[in-house]
Image: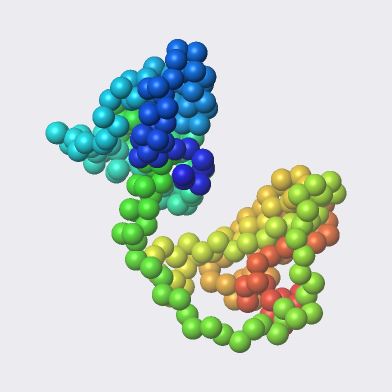
Length: 249
């Protein structure tokens, strides 16, 4: 069986083939009990099981293949939504497809027809996952650099995980977002982002590059706007946060 314990059609057929000899020899009361068990095991309706038990229990290839339900206009809209909202995962994208498409349609990015809106409202999560996987295959991969020596400034920094139930404001998750597109070569804009765990207060500033000078300047601009002091910072391990200049700051 599959990992989610839901039988595939082949597994249902195999199970019913094993149960059919006993079912055919049982009386009416026994058949009722067996059908109860079959419903629980297969997750299928009683009438469906009775119909299958009286059939060949073999799969046959389709005489006519079904056409695509979701065509080029759906793929184009989904790709636009996916890329416009930071390529978030299908699980977060799926329940908000109609609202996100409406926002993009208001700015002329998506032609949201009635049929397209209906498809976005009814498409399944599995279909969205498959489409996003196809989109990712088309994207050029950013080459990974060779492994570098560990950053010595990380050795004296205590590593911990911020608990989610912090009630005191001042403990921030910190990240530097790269707005470089498909390649990281050259100079481009970054967003320095800080989010307070307790209150949800967020601050962000745009930086050109990620040198210690612009990073320090970004932190100073955020410090000037915060209504409460910083008690702890939880950044990633990037060198823009861990270097001698930022340690001194």
